[in-house]
Length: 398
Image (cartoon, rainbow, N blue to C red; front, side, top):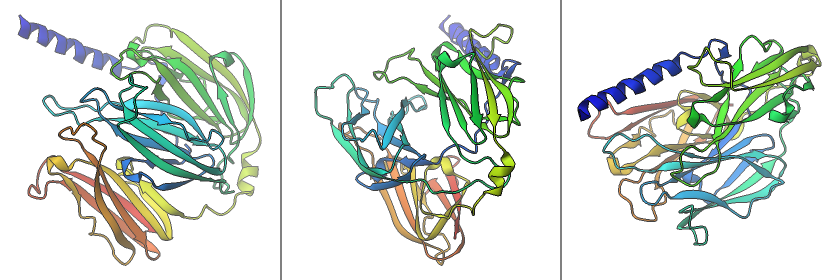
């Protein structure tokens, strides 16, 4: 009987997955936005460092937290200047672990918008969320230096950067006038634990006038372990060309294609301005950066760095498993010089077994040219393991 019930549950779960894959016919799939703001990622290996950012960029802080013993999580402590950095989202990302594997932790993620030039600090404490009156078990601190954004224009044929308009449910039914290059961000309450989510209704938005970006979901702050917590769906649109069109969104379960959305949002957008004018005033492309920070998410990318600049890789790893990132020194030494290759274990206040960390690899750009960084996450004695992971980035030094 027990075996039969397990088979039935597995069949039901598979059926739900197939139903979810059959997305609603009138809902447009979410597409990545290549014009999204530059993101600077800060990880455990950046403790006590000075991080440089520019106005308009996004600062993402990812810190290991531990649900294995008491649901330890990171929380922000006083010290941040609201005039320099604005907290946009906070999330607790839970890792999927194979059955029987020792849980090595999750991630506390903080996302900030760089608002204005200035200096400030970010300080975080790690502890149990319900023990707010106790000092943190460990702390993490970084200094932030925010600079004014470089005055660069887009390439020919692309709109110039403009204002950002933040819209909510209260703006449904309104008409918004914007200019070419402006960005519209629609933030709507959502709860994906119910199966519902906001999606773009296809055929309602003229893609030549407005470009739709990916819809991102951020869960509300909540005590670790709490289920059923809601959050917000954030939909981003960029004005490409003069014209009039609608932003139409529906709140529905993707597999219930025959039902009307439980909620709708509609905004009429009138775009003014000239793409040609923006192209005519375009300046030279922005110079290569003096510092490039890369994470696991940047695998396969090509980046540009200035001569004498640095390329910093912060890659997740776990030395307790015998795995490590290798081949860091196998790079064109005439172009890139290896300056650092260190493993830093994540904070482990309770002495848990199996806690992972971050491998930090730093290269210095010596002269102009192109070099490829090829790394492998592996156990040195098991060269042909199916669990080995390759990581590669191409660095163009200008």
